[in-house]
Image (cartoon, rainbow, N blue to C red; front, top):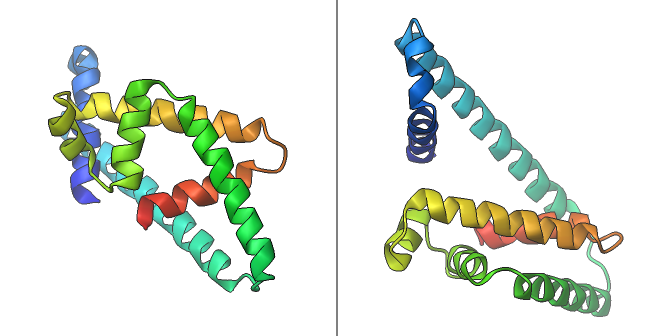
Length: 151
């Protein structure tokens, strides 16, 4: 997590490098930025932990219901993935289904890690929109994305 935060901060500083001359106390600015990124990362982890805890405490339903729901969700996800651009689909598959990190994907595709991150963000946005268009399935999208990232 610390490495990811450090990389995100570096990328943000690099993107805003033209405006760095306006900052009077760069050390304080950098410290505050790192602090905010760390707090946001801990918040995200807390939300994910709470979601996982909530899902684990859900009562078991009929196995047929589970099977049909899982099959329907899987079909929705595969349909949404098929609509992604070729590059987005490739990055999503390598990240979420093969478990590669952005740096590994970048090396494999011969692109920068920020390009991989941009493709992943665009893919997740497109998937979220696709699930939002299907009534009652947006919460399923978040669960699928959460579990595909960690498991």
